[in-house]
Length: 288
Length: 300
Image (cartoon, rainbow over all chains, first blue to last red; front, side, top):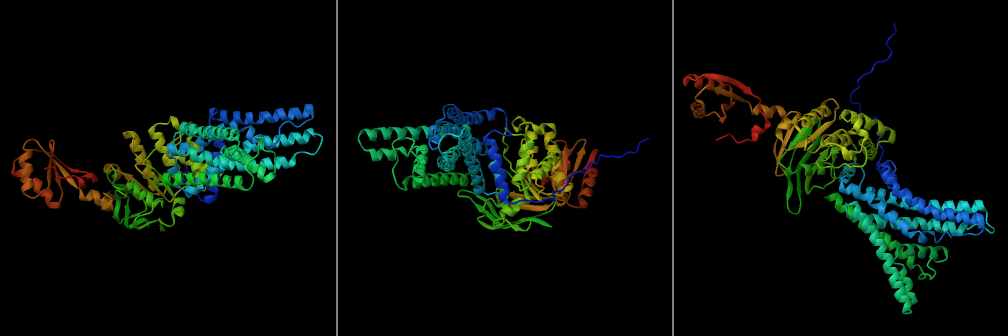
């Protein structure tokens, strides 16, 4: 006869005696949760398709470029022009994924649950913004870094383009902040995800069309200086103009941008405007 | 021990006064907050959570001022809102783990607590499926689980039985009772149905139009409403008339006469009236008082 060694007890309700972390770690948890969500991690397979497809498209020119470097021993694509070249892909990513971060919480009214916890409205907005910024930065920084690693491995004649690489990485961060704040601000105004996608993509199409039309018209009437200002309406050219001003890289549009500190100031002003709109939107949503 | 207290609490919105000089206290255990829709129940909860500043007056939760210590209160208090608040595309487990982290629990602890609490509220295998496919009863359980996952000292449940079928309602009420007793978490539960709350509450607060109507222990409610049901073969009307003459509060409900018990004399009066009128008494029983009766107008 064997002795009974294990018994299952119904231990009932147990209280939690462990640590309770502060607002900061709650906000960090929200940011990580949101960042995973942007790439569809921890969600259905269907929601992974679009983000990873776009990541693959972003990597495509890099792969081609490395192949060209390896086979023809000449550099193919420059770092500074990468963001401008891939602007349509970035815009689609922003339009497709930024509504995911904000719309469901408004539509399914999860926001009151967040606010019934120690986090504040500003923590919430900050976490969402950080998640989108990091996602966009990764989308730009990973291909750029792969390209740089490729360049170092292929070992082209002449020194590596380290300065260009650093310039493009800094501007990738600026672009991520700018695009994330614009995308979230636009998407947060509607609880409907589809409308959010449409409004972000409409914003991109509108700004790029306006900047192209004005640039063309002003150039044809001989007002070259004004034409260069018109380019800055497109957020991607705005970032490029800041890159030119900060690092003296080649302008990606071939024409150049207005000189001086103005592009940088406009960039800061646009980010501030978008953030103000975003915060005001959530102040209102929180009080209702 | 007092878990929450308000003093002259007033909240005015541009067009309505939601709370009007409300002064109440509640102790540990299960407290019911009763009022019609629009009586100010949800507004009171938002003020107690420190999410809405009061126009005037004070509110204290677990000894902390709601207007200045909102974040500290929200760390140790749970909240289950009245409205739908669940994202459809994540599983209950994932959602509750996330909400535990949002209350400051480290990730491993959040996982353990979420598994524990989902079992306590009665969600089993289905907790791994997306919430979008859940029934109303299951959704209410998830809402309750997210309010309890961080082991709060006090939990606010706003209309937890809304939309549930009778069985679901009973289960939810039994669960609320367990939270207050077995779990040792104080509960403030709102409802517009008085009858529901008397089954689970130790104390009931009734508000109407943002003002206090009544606040007392559940025993006092049912005591005040002691009534007896009298049934006779024929001659219910003469009996009712005789008792009314003697100053008793009587109401005819179908074939049964309900008599409010004022004192011991009421029983004698009923006995004497039945004898005097020479009626055949079929039934004489004590009716269990219900909170509703306090507010119900006696039938004319």
